[in-house]
Amino acid sequence: MEYKNVFGFEVNYKTITMLAFLAILPNFLGMLNIPTVFGFKIHLFQYLVFIAAAIYGPVGGAISGGLGSMFTAFALGNPYIAVGNIILGFAAGFLLRKGFGMIQSVLIAYAIQVPWLYLTDVYLAGMPHALVVNIMIALLISNIVWATLAKYTYKPISKVVE
Image 1 (spheres, one colour):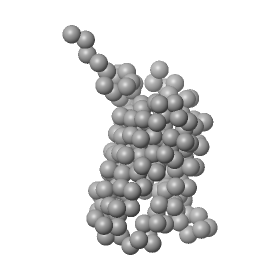
Image 2: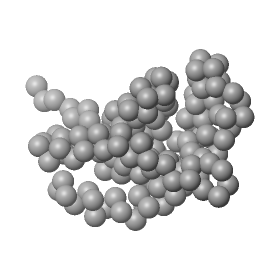
Image 3: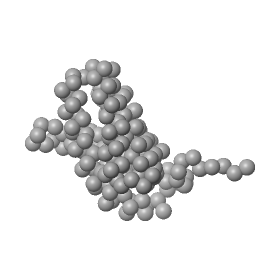
Image 4: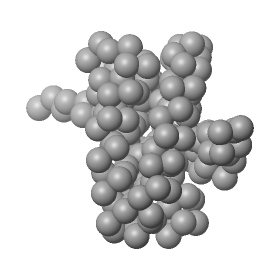
């Protein structure tokens, strides 16, 4: 009997090590935010989620998104953050595997994530509507910035695991 590789990438020590890096490091990047003159902060962690999605597809994007946002989820007492980033990473990886470009994949993935983000933050986490809207704007801008950077850097990074 032949087994099918359900991960969508070759599983070996290089891929496991790189994926672990891409799943753990976003927690540290999640502690850092870049303030803007517009009054919101640009988040940094998405860059590695998009790299994982590009290299490892939907499974890698989901792992990096979920595990990579654990610190933020625990720090804010909002476990829904991790699920939202699983959605973002999975959808971006899925769309990239279907042939969409990086920026287009990320924007569509974000559009898929937004209803989850809004509903859970407002109705389950009890955050004010205005704050959630500001977070959504900050995440949209962050996603565009990091998707653009990921578009030009994921190929050289992927050579590490070849």
